[in-house]
Amino acid sequence: LFHHCPRQVRKTPVPPPRHTSEAKMMSALYLTVLDSLIFVSFAATFQSATSASLTHLGGGFLGAAALNACTHAVLPVVFKRLYYNDTGREDLNKRYNRFHEMINALVQMIFFVYFEVVIFRSNSWLWWSDTKTAWTSDPVPSNLRMFYGVNLGTWLTAAVTCRFYEERNKDWLLMYTHHAASIILVAGSYAIGQERFGIMVLFLHHVSDIVLNCCQATHYLGWDAESFPFGIPVAEVLFVCNICCWAYTRLYIFPFTIVRSVTFEIAGIEGEKYARMLSVFLYLLQGMHIWWFSEMIRVVVKILTPGVSAKEAASVYLTEREEEAAKKKKAKEDKKKM
Image (cartoon, rainbow, N blue to C red; front, side, top):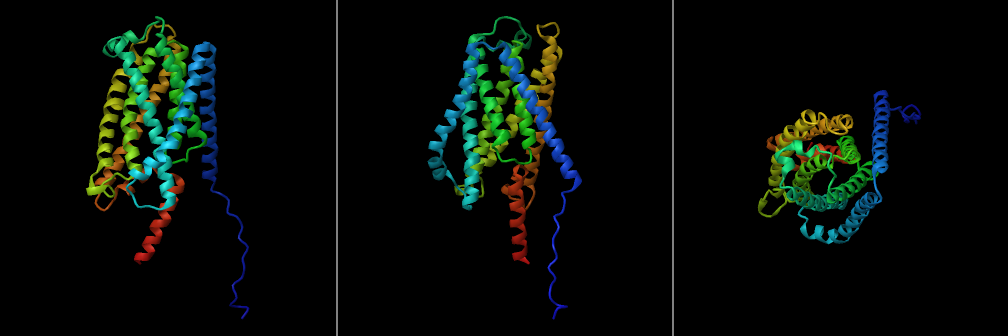
């Protein structure tokens, strides 16, 4: 009898693999470096800022907070009416949170693009037709200075949200690096008086982000061929539009207009040394653009693979928690089949 009784063996905690702890240490060190660079950028901005500029910066903070409050009051009703997917309550809450983030970003991007077009039209789009004219030491227009302050405030809000509140998916660290590089570029160009060229960089990002946010918002609403009435692939069509827009703005105009100009046309300008230093972050952004485009192509390849659904193809962007839950769900389904 005693021989067949199972012995209660005390389980000792298994220490985490050495490579995991080392990766966490490297990640923490990397985040500390990014946080320090953001702090230094803002210190340089405050040193050269006027009281009006600080007011605009505060306006960016308050505007982002007010937009978040307004959309949070309206969007739940809109989401329930437009949602076309039969999922559990937990998945529904996650989708709503992501949808809320996309709509917030979409409204901001539309606002920014409108004012950027107004500024560009005021000089007949001269900076785009001849990029050398953007590298000048003439006084910066007041409306451009104001727009820059508001933009910097919203970028910092996005970085803080990404750093401390957003659930971390596979490319979270890359996204936070993108926020940090953008803040450094905006703050740095503000400090050396090169806002004309900076707004060109912002414009390319904001235009492509409008299409990206529309694409992601329809995805979280379930507007894909599997769930939308009559099998209309709204999300899939917007995803293709997003790939085309991304390729044109960030893989064609950005390197051959922006990166080319900052590489070959800034010799002799005021603050050339600092402009050269900031150009490193432009190269970093270009590398991230290429990486994200490759991820989009991976999704397309998965969608075109027979037997793979659009939801499975989008697993590239799952959070660690969602990925673990998806694996458990798949394992249960496999057991039922057996």
